[in-house]
Length: 275
Ligand code: MG
Ligand code: MG
Image (cartoon, rainbow, N blue to C red; front, side, top):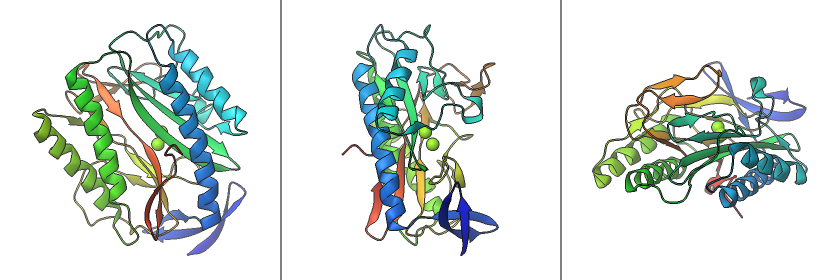
């Protein structure tokens, strides 16, 4: 373990095969919880506002205002040139949808909203999938399966567990939901979870599938964003010409849920859960 100065924050680092994983102190996790609550509040506002006739640009403005009113900064805005404070991914869009005045929500849309905020130099990152009015049973099942997979991943977070124990728990949950729902879900493979703390995207990368018992051991003070993405069709994805929006290759609908989770001696601490 070595000391490091990252983003003006003195943090400890745990080395795993040359990759440095940040270890937070209890006080630093408290600060991450404060950032996480800002994200939770922004997403709650967006969830309450998402209805037919509302544009995704309006949802973005609402999220940005909530974040700035809390004294925080939207982490997505300007991230590698991303132009907004949320990703708004509607229907066949999986992740990284760019909010737009011309994308007006309609009855039956399924939208995932991803949001990140920085408060006192610490990051929170979370996503929800929302129904605009009534959606089909298949779409509800899709979102339920995605959320259950995230929760299974969270439940696998413990000091001493290996990173891919979390991946395996996510994949097992997806298969269990598919069986229970009598459907097949596509597990998006190109994208996954990540370490988080003094930056949004840090080591380690967390796949949403795979065998258990591999990767670094989780240690108290680590934090990871757990974010499964599922489709009602194939797992293949396509990035649109805007350089951001990721859609399903077959046009099927997708869902995405995410929480930022800390490893503690008492088990997982969901830093982006609403109060
Ligand atoms: Mg996110
Ligand atoms: Mg994330």
